[in-house]
Length: 400
Image 1: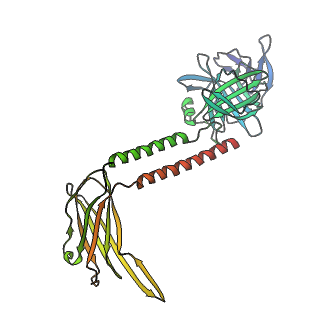
Image 2: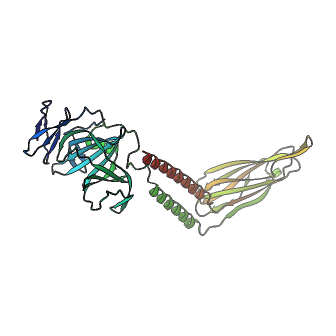
Image 3: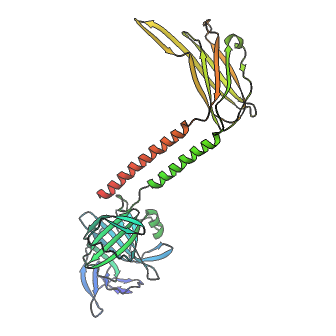
């Protein structure tokens, strides 16, 4: 349809598949309406709109694998701050989509049949097995129009909106007539791809149906599934295994001053587990030290560890004191199945003549549930943080 504006002499050419009853000039904002003689007459003139509507009449976009053309633009508001743009899009089949933009957030909608009337503003509405909560009901005003329309854009409507992010049910009531739109939040990247542009309005607040960045319910299900899998795996791998003592001996310091103590070989079967080493030496105001090497006899891989045993005590300024201990424990973590032996180098203070031996016990434990509970704690804390972030996100949405 070609429409020459009588005010600015701009001719707007666009192939539209509607019976046009209202036209607003994209150049000067003059609105025309069709009278009973099918002639277009001046209706009113909109002020030059400064709203950041970067899309224009005739611009094309690819939505749902169909090419749509913008045939109409409406800028609406319901107070001095809250304004939004509505883009009417039509494809070659005459099908419509409606793109709503507010504060850089986008919703893609289509008109649906909905029998239930919502003029009494119920708190919830059900649709497609989802419950939508009433977000707001307002009487928006039209600030600006551009393009072709098959209805009276000046009609004073009531707008009633229900949300279940990322979905929305939007009702427009004019008298006893009710028009219903069903929509879904669309990401800014999808809008850029659809219009093949990077020039879109900047984002300034949370969108009406913008989803939270993480689906808390799905995250909880995933974490619970992971926890169950870890627990079942732990049980399956270790159901037939108990702790295995691989060394229990007392080593005289004087016999190993020039050589290392080498333990008998031992074989470990099952999944990886820590090797716990317990030490005892009768140190008294002195120290002892043990250097341990765990040697895999098949790969010759060596794992080293060292531990001091220190025990000091005394009497100073009328008070007794002590520090340290005559025993120590430490782990060599994640020891895999295989055949091993231990090489041990014991040391003590040369001036310590009363201490003659060091007792060593090495036990390959059942794998501890410590790692499982640490993982469970991390997931629980992370889930709690995400949950409270989502609550804060929702509070901001509703406070707007």
